[in-house]
Length: 466
Ligand SMILES: [Mn+2]
Image (cartoon, rainbow, N blue to C red):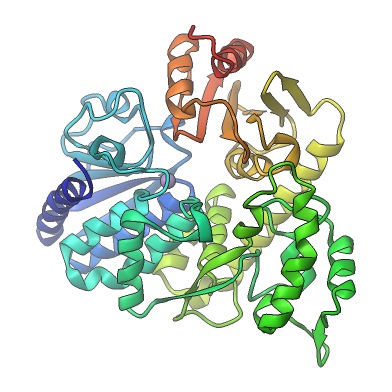
């Protein structure tokens, strides 16, 4: 089992898709609403269209809460990254379907139609994501679809598959990256990795860097301005704000050295500095100095679209007419960033928002956090120093009498558990739905069972087998 077997399955899926597309079939792409899901649907949609087929895209907040109505009318349904539970959710309503995924489950590979990387022994946390699998299928349909590889690179980075040293892409993601480079759409270099590398004033780039979270600087633009000034770096050039891209190598080194002491305040500082410098991926066909040129920033943009109900915009940014959508994309991005910033500020300052239970931190987002935003919020909070050695649960209430929560491992050494399978097993006892990856999971639980769910998760994390 391994990459070759996985690839032969994606090749099989490619042949099926190609055949159906050539028959002008109607294909439904049913995708997760995160950046990886939007990227997957975009890649497959474009490939189907090029081969003559018709596609419809539907985007959902995950298998956890899917509405599988009116899916039987299509010749084929492709589920992208919707997670565990798909087989039972489908029942007998669809005659032809396939699913690609990289979520980790207790009951993997129980259906021939599910292509899940873990079933092939391929690490779905680092080496492959849904969009890189979608790209393998696209590439299998027609080798000329190689020009879509950049979209999968964006999906992989947005899914944080670049957590190895030097922030590199590995495994199948690396194969996809090589295709993107050969297609002339991505170039790789080494640089400071901060948010808005090409677009933001330097102090803003530091202040909006959430990965890693820099204590004292993230979210604190005044401190960032002070730091840049003290380091002797000019913030402006002829009245124009300089960006990280404009800095000389010497200035970048100076800046990194100035940031280092802040990182060492974090209890898990070791290795954090490494995360601020590494491979950066530029989308060379995009307008320079826009939010579209840095592949990580593009990924944030897709997440912003997905999490704020603008999935169509995200897809259009990947494969549609850019001129009509660019400014709308930038607007979505800024709303998304400011919502996250507000949530973090309230959570860290308002009494009662953080509950500590042994080595688990519970963040109460009820009445504050939009249910679609808790995934990205949990990811950012897991980088905050206070939670780095903990497992973090971010919860919020939904308007349909449910509690939705996202569970993350903090940066430091945490309890040795696999969160996706753990959440899945608790959901079996409490009702609701849930699952995910070893270091990131989510669930949706009837509000009446929420406390029971949380205490079961906490005790399992702390080693209680029941
Ligand atoms: Mn994914």
